[in-house]
Length: 324
Image (cartoon, rainbow, N blue to C red; front, side):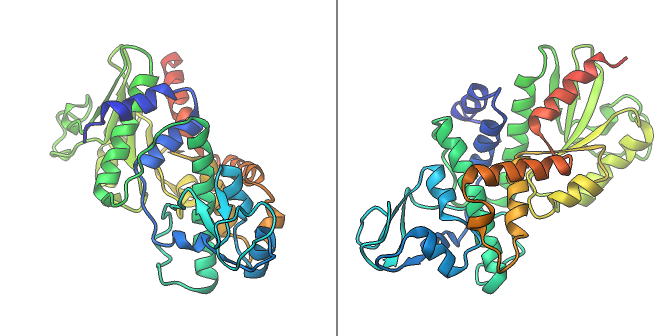
C-alpha cells in the first residue's frame, strides 16, 4: 500500500516530534469504536460536569476532553461552563470518536467491563486529540479500515519513517527473501520465507531485522517461521518488534521473544493501562484531575516497563553504526 504525498508530508513535517508521529500514524490507522456515545452522559439541570461524572461513577474525567479542546453543551445547546440549563445528554463539540483498543470487551458489555473499556477509549482519544490539535494537522481518520489493511498501512508508515530518519545511504527494505541474506542463502531449511523489514547501513551491513505488527496477537506463527532461521544462522542480527498493541503491551515488553520491543505510542499505552486498572469505586477525577496528570502517569508506566517509542528505535539503529 503506497503512502499518499499528504501522508508522507505529515510524517516528514513532524519528524522531530515523537508524539506527533504517534498521532499521525495512529490517526491514519484508526480503528473506529461503536461506543463513543458513552461520552454523552446525562446531566441534570443545575448540575455541573464534575458532579454528573461523580454521580455516574465514571471511570474517566470530562476534564480530559475539555483539556484536549472539546466543548461541552447541555441538551438546550448552552455551553457547560458552569451548570446545565437543561436536563439531558451532554453534547460534545467536535463529535467524540473513540478508537477501539480492546477487542476483548464487546459493544454490548455492561457494568465494570464497559466502564473500563469506555474510560480507556476516551483517555486515549483525549491524548490523541491534544497532540493532533497542537500540530494543527488534518489527520483524516478512517471509519471502516480493515484489519489487514491497517497492518499493511502501519508497516508502510514505519518503513517510510525509518527511511527518512536514518542516515543517507541507509536502506529499509521489506519482504526480502531469506535466501538473499548472507548466511541463509544456501541453507536447505530456509525455503521461500521472507523477512518483514530489514535495515541496511551505507556499507551494506545488515543492521537489524524488524517485525511490524499493529496487533501483537496476529501472525505469530508466520513471524516465528521467519525468526528461527535468522536466529540460527545469523545470531549476530538483532531482531526487533514494532507494534501498536494495547491490551498485551505489558506482555510484549516483558515476554516477547524479540531482542527489543518498540511501541507506536508508549505513553498513551501507559495511560490506558492506568485507567483500565482503576478499581470500580475509585474516582478518576480525583486520581487524574486533568489530562496532563494522566499523560504523566502514562509516561511513568511506559518507562517502568522499558517500553520505548519509534524515536528510540531510530536512535538505537543509528547507534549501531558506531559498533565494530
